[in-house]
Length: 321
Ligand code: TYM
Image (cartoon, rainbow, N blue to C red):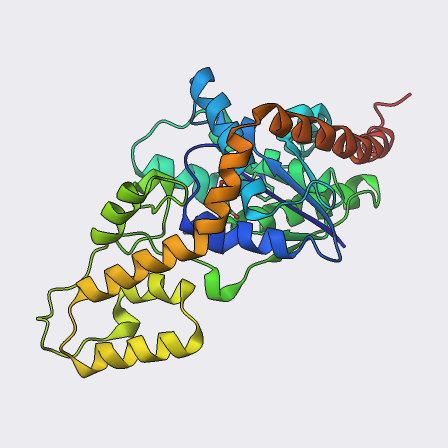
């Protein structure tokens, strides 16, 4: 099956990205034809500093490789290296109703916050649809925050096919319910833009500081506590084995345990879980040229598929004479 997903190089990778998406991307490499890319042109809607964007792109690339993305099995590349995506985005934008895009969270949230969005933010879902449709993707593994964008993609693919003939594959979303929305340290969705993330490859001190600042209620140490209403417990549960989770829940309910105990346990789990990835990442940091080569080789492979689709699209819409 053709699996595809992307991540914006708009900041440091956090637990939400990993559990909501990247972890599943690694698993889905087995038995699928997986395409994963760095959505650098999407990030340009917010990161408008060349040095920063370059750094972010390489950072995300090294993160992915450290997690186990295997360039022998998956096609791994940068969005901007596939110009066919931009061409398809234009074709799709001629089919995208303004009202549909006006209803998209990516744009609506910025408007609600009084931020004047640029056209890139407004057109963001169309570019995302092109990312997906150009590779005839069947399954798109993402966190829940991207659900609406996949729906727009499906709408545009159907509309294209109805208007011009069956050319594009209509994809399905793949959202792991258990990890659909990973909470941040303040209990809202973990997000770079809310400044509530726990970054996976930050130094140990910074991670500790973030974990210690996870917001909890003020129930006194001696009193029983409700694990199901606790954001800290939700984060701990990401790492704990079922019996560890059950034991911790029992300690919550029994009372006599302060939140510091859970924070320490969460910190240990994070360091233990990501320890091997942190080590592997250091190897890539020492060989940035290798990382660039991997992305280049991935782009060559991705372009072959993208070109096949764009040829069909040109023919179908009538620009090929
Ligand atoms: P981005 O870069 O915001 O996030 C990358 C992936 O991480 C998931 N994610 C989360 N999942 C659960 N809980 C959270 N708190 C959380 N925070 C982030 C996201 O759902 C996503 O899967 N528009 C995309 C990038 C993109 C893309 C694509 C994805 C561009 N084109 C085509 C798939 C297919 C984005 O901004 O992801």
